[in-house]
Image (cartoon, rainbow, N blue to C red; front, side, top):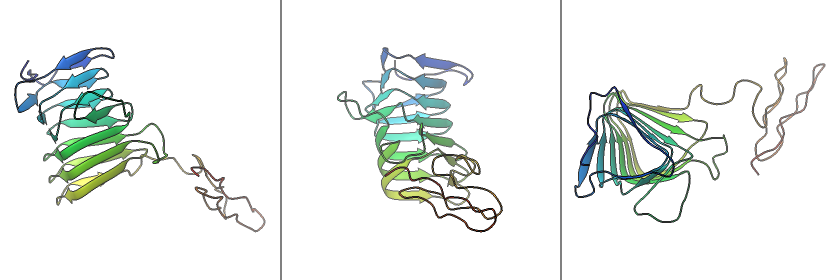
Length: 201
C-alpha cells in the first residue's frame, strides 16, 4: 500500500510478529489514521504522520519523520535503516520534526538515562506551537536542536513525586540531599535524617 488513509478516527494495529511494507516503491508516505506498531513496519525514507503514531516495535527505513499529529517513541521500540540486529530503545533518524501544533512523546520505562531511550539524529526540530514531552528519561544525540518560539520540550511533572523514587532523601522540615552516583547529604538537627541512597553507578 502507498499510504494509510482515513478520516483520522481509526487505528491500524501492527501486532508483534506481523510485518508491513508501506509505500515500498515510493520516497514518501502519509499516515492519516492512527498507527500502533508492536510488530515491524518498513517505511520509505520520508514519512508525514498526520495522526497518532506509537512506535513500540520495529520501524525500518525512515530517514525524515514529520509529525503533524502525536508521535510516541517508546523504549520497547526502535528504528533503523535496514532489517538487522535489534537495538531496543534506540532510534536513528536524519531529521525528526514536530510540525506546528503537533505533539511528540519520548517515553522510557525507567528513570535511568544510561542504556535507556536513545535518539540519534542530525536535526531535531520543533516548529512553533509544537510540544515535546520526555516521560521518565531520554538521551538525545543531535548535531542540531531547533526549538522555535512557541514550541516546547519538557519533562515537567513527568518524574518522581516529592520524596519518592531511587535516591530519595527525607522530606521532614530539614530535608536531606538526594542520592545518585553517591549518597545524598544528611540533614542534622532534632529531626535529622540520612541522605538518599546511591543508585545508577
